[in-house]
Image (tube, rainbow, N blue to C red):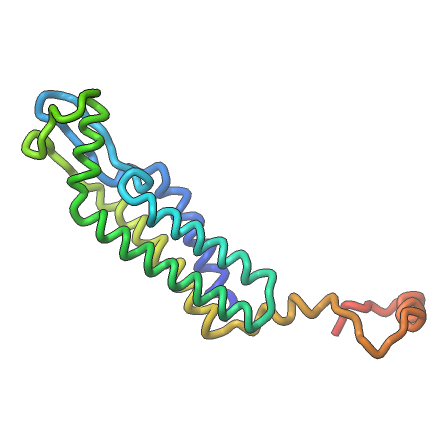
Length: 180
């Protein structure tokens, strides 16, 4: 089941790359002018939490079974928090749309919410939700099935009972010291 953890994180990374440049909302001003809202403009905290969750996944690749559970739990928590932050900001993007309209016009306070037309892009929004869900699924799989990391970590550890002379003798005879 380590594949679920790995494939979930890979899917999250691929979706993240697509969603970074995708416009989530188009903002049109009645007087003329348009702009777009991306994930980083709409909810920078959510995006930062996803990056932190993916860093926690990377840490699971380097640690033992008990630490894999801890980092996977951290990854799941960060992914859920990112999803909540995304929904809080993504459901009503009025503040971000107003800031984008003021950036397009170049003057603050001239544009009101009544002058704006905000159109969502459902595919881009599904990408963002997919990133968060894939991160949570990967972290949950790591908490449930952490045993795969143990094989990778202990593979290169040497036997404590063997002396260095015995290890060299085994190598001379063609034995692989990493084979278990």
